[in-house]
Image (cartoon, rainbow, N blue to C red):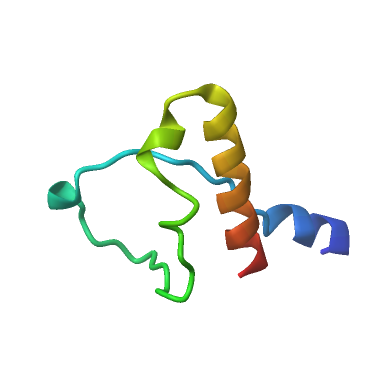
Length: 66
């Protein structure tokens, strides 16, 4: 596989969604506690499209760096 194809397949598509922690089901995907996403993701940023889009970019950057 070419290097360009490997880079394209290894990118993360981030999304942000409000959930109730009581209804959260554990999955095989885990985020280690060394990433502090609570500073990036907040409920007040979910209000407008511009802030939500910026928040998704920041989350995607964190996951891609990891």
